[in-house]
Length: 512
Ligand code: MSP
Image (cartoon, rainbow, N blue to C red; front, top):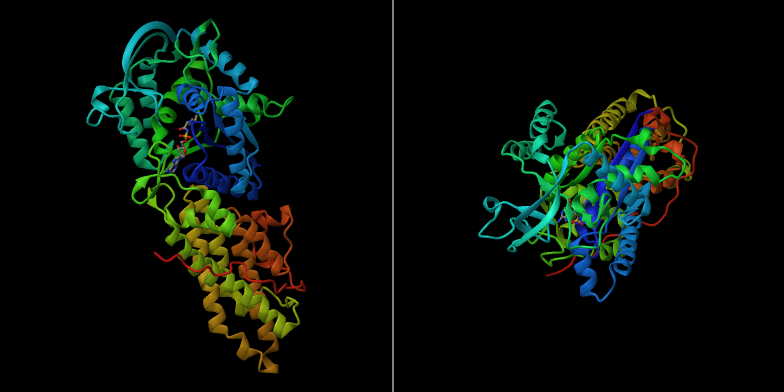
């Protein structure tokens, strides 16, 4: 059994959860569920980033203390995790005492290693990024990510001597070209490093909402340093009495979108090198979800509430749509119209219909009992080969975090099964008593194929997958969902097929 530790970014508490957060959390959950199906020892971490200017400002705007503000908002992110059916093993908060303790211990190690110095510095600071920009990086004088002018900030701070790590980082990135995926993001990180790294301020003097610098309590630790350390700190206190650091560190993958690439691909490994920890095994940078052509984010104000879609149609259609519509790793546009189209064409017509046709034919021709035919029958060989190839192919794609390609491989097979129904025309076989054995095989073949598809679909649409197995009279306990059970011969004959209402009732499409 391999261990698999994966993380979402911890989300800023300067606004409510939105589609972008739900997207990363869903994608991470898909990877977590897939690895659990492989039998891996999985730890899936998510949580909230609660310190810093942005959060203190957001609290002040609401007339709340930072503490009241973060307690309330963090809860909403926790609920979002549950609402999108994400199976996080731990929800961390940077205000957790265990985190704060560990952050102090971590920066103390950096200090003891001689990588931190006190200096005075002035620079262009964007509050939205919580970061400094170089003059050259600005677009028309504005922050390239937020389109607002940065402010001049001058303070006496503690500096992390990041420049010392430039060579080690570039050697590391060159030696590990897959460490950041996709490739384009690796190249961006490398070129960022090789353009030259400045030392960075890692404390703030003017701010009180943060973790105190252990050797100078007049300063608090810069929110990004505080936040990045979460991936390690959470393992020190998530399960009191258990050494999860030993069990899970280094992480297999941090997932995020490109807005925070620089922090994760440059600063985080340097911090780890400085404090003397192993580096994570990889990072996967997915694209932005765009609506009406613009990045959806709190700052730009074009927020869409994922909860409305979920409330109306359940969570699986949303999970399916996001992964199907936007190639995971690239930017892509989403819309309600696109959602409704895929829902009707693919979930209702292709998948839902396949299941209901199969169940209803088993009802009509075999009294509702899945025929106990031989899954090894010669007549089923082709469907079997294609099914097992689909299992292998989707697994390879899931392993590579190519979630959209994995889903496509499964979907091709769903379509294949629909064609199979047309080709075999069970309604014709049913008319001829001498073909009864053949009809048994065809019906069993349909169940066996859908069982494989359901097992592979499970990470993306978990509730639907289990429901398909139920309707087809197939076992579906946790151990039945393991991928080593995803073999053709694993189908169970003799079970009862349940003619329940449509899995995905068609929706009336939105008119302009
Ligand atoms: N608090 C930092 C992360 C610290 S991690 C050590 C932060 N928080 S955030 O709330 O702004 O979340 C950013 C992340 O949310 C992105 O990296 C991405 O995972 C997700 N997304 C936010 N908007 C998104 C889109 N429009 N599209 C896709 N993902 C988006 O940055």
